[in-house]
Image (cartoon, rainbow, N blue to C red; front, side, top):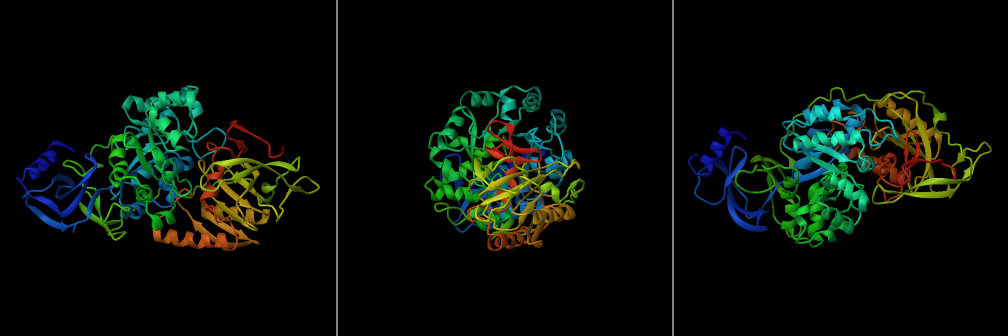
Amino acid sequence: MNKAQVKILIDAAASRIPSDLRIRNAKVVDVYNKEVFSSDVYIKDGYIVGFDGKREAKEEFDADGKFLVPAFIDAHCHIESSHLSPSEFSDAVVPSGTGTVIADPHEICNVTGLDGMRYMLDASKDIPLSVFLMFPSCVPATPFEHSGAVLTSRDVKSFIDDERVLGLGEMMNYPGVNSADDEVLSKLDEAYRRDKIIDGHAPSITGYALDSYASASIETDHECESPKEARDKIRKGMYVMLRQGTACQNVLQLLPAVDEKNFSRFLFCTDDRQPQSIINEGHVSHGVNLAIRSGLDPVIAISMASINAATCYRLRDRGAIAPGKRADFFLSSSIYDGVKPDEVFIKGKLVAKGGKIIEKAKHTEPLNVSGKMNVKDFSIESFSLKLTSDHVRVIDIIPGGVVTGAGDAYVKRDDKGNWIHDPEADILKLAVIERHHGTGLHATALIRGYGMKRGAVATSIAHDSHNIIVIGDNDEDMYLAVRKLIEIGGGITMYKDKRELGTHTLEIAGLMTDESLEEVTACLDRMHETAEMELHVNKDIDPFMTLCFMALPVIPAYKLTDSGLFDVVSFSFVDNSL
């Protein structure tokens, strides 16, 4: 905001010039005094300029006694996980009351490098949703996989001065922090020099390790597993995020840690939220409503989803209903049994009503980030899994999250030592195929808990390097599924008995599409039904989101990368055979 803009706001607040809009008959949620008061609200040039009075306004809107709530701020998300382009994502989440997101684009940057960062900045400009980015700190997440790019401290320097880049994205390389790795410290230093925030990613980190991590001025974490861990991280000066994504859901798990003394250190985030979750349950509002319905004071919950996030990320122009703040808010008939945004205003303009966007956001062509599929030396023989023992390591799926178990099992082998699928055992083959540089790298392992009886599911979404990952009971269906993804440039597909059952095309980096939320949801609904009815995937897991995280070598315990089976606890590759 500049001097001329401020003068206009002052003049409107002082009633020397008319306001643009008067919201009449509202119950304003005051996140400063933690109370609700009845008042009119006046808006000029997209900013709030005052409450009750006899100011003149060019237009009026009757709130009809509804609660006027500051728009929610998602403290940490990956837009790519919605499968939607930034403009379509805006159309999807704004109607549920989200006005601002802090997005880490490390998914697309792992595929397309700095081109992905440029695309996300360009495509999220001039849309109703305010999108701020964190520069990805760990591309690739580890040196134990092959991503589409490697981003260094020099790359951080090239973007971090952008006013919409708030700092450094989730620092997943906590061993690098704790060992004071020089390149890691150089990345952190770019944020230090500009007084910008550094996001954390520290699952189950405690004791000396947490002390050294917090000593690096890493200020947030969204990976807490227990109330005790949450309170410990707050004690070390960190903000803790209550996350309600699609696969990872810990609002209710962590809620006992929140009390009247420490609630200012809690934020809400979605992290990874798929389109069905958004359309069926909402966005940030879903986590807020879970907390309210579990007994958290609604004004406290709203504060955690608004002013707390604004304070944490130094967004001084939003997060509250007060003079000088952006007029980003929504009207809800109630807050005491949860919020339901009826009308959503962004910068004082009505942009959504009844859960629907009024005017679609501006579209940006996905230049330099499409058609990213470079697979070489790939054949059906790539899926062979030769074992030296019947006793094997198994990735155990744990429903409700992305943490896996380090399991073991006894399996069948043929006379050459190759794994044979046993229909009586819930053990399938998992494979990861490198798709960025044509290296021909691939790896196979065994996984338990997916439930599929026959067929294959493949996707080009495989956190965080986003190589192709495929699961199946037979090599033929797995091969055909991977070939389909190569042909369409990425997405999700299913095969059974050599027959394609359904495909969702993701033409932007193999991660996103320009289709609408409704189109994407309809496609995925059909595919989820097929996964359940024809493939018999375990009903307790999301068939696609769960698969996406089986290649993530920063979350315990066993994961599979294109280089082999990885033990996240020992941070080393291990053999499939025991």
